[in-house]
Amino acid sequence: MFTGIVEALGRIEKTEKEQHNVHYWLSCPFTNELKIDQSLAHNGVCLTVVEIKDGQYKVTAIQETLDRTNLKSWTVGSLVNLERCMPAHGRFDGHIVQGHVDQTAVCTNIEDQQGSWKYYFEYDAASGQVTVEKGSICVNGTSLTVVDSGDTTFSVCIIPYTYENTVFKTLKQGDEVNLEFDILGKYIAKMMKAKL
Image 1 (cartoon, rainbow, N blue to C red):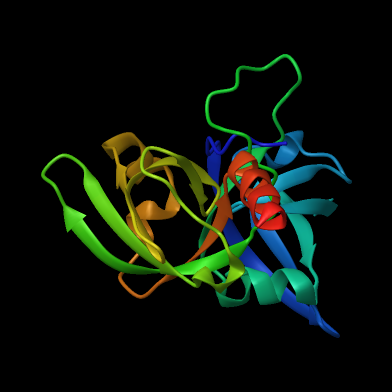
Image 2 (tube, rainbow, N blue to C red):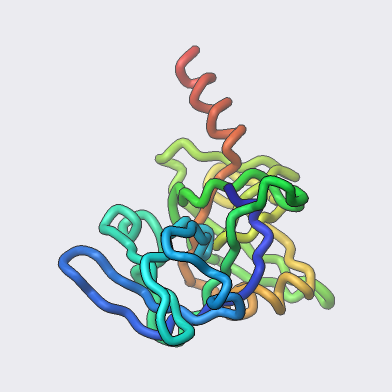
């Protein structure tokens, strides 16, 4: 389980294609603390560390992951939000994040608000996912509060610390991001749909 509080930025150092899978080699400030078989959120996608060598570690994305997330657009030099699993004795600073991306969204606008930034996103509502104002949303692994909520759109505001320490500083209009909707909201929506 994760909280959506980004711990560090990782950098894609190398990619390797193997049949339908893609192996990504990354470097990050805590590579020397990682262990084989450890779960690590990459832009909100839970991936398993499968190899560590020469100050880098390797994770593998299967076709399902590539189809559902923005990992297919990663290239050498791409920056990625990283978060290790929440320790059982740790503080719960964000919200419940599983590292299971529901779908992607497109950044439709970015407003510089003179001290903060407002990002607008659009997603496919056919999946039945919803946002609510002041609810939680995980964008590229970052736990955020929804500002505006529409049927297929939402916005979030980013403070300077989050801007500087996550991939938000590299996002541009038209970029694809990973979304994980609030788990409690997903269960409630499914129960309500079953009752109707």
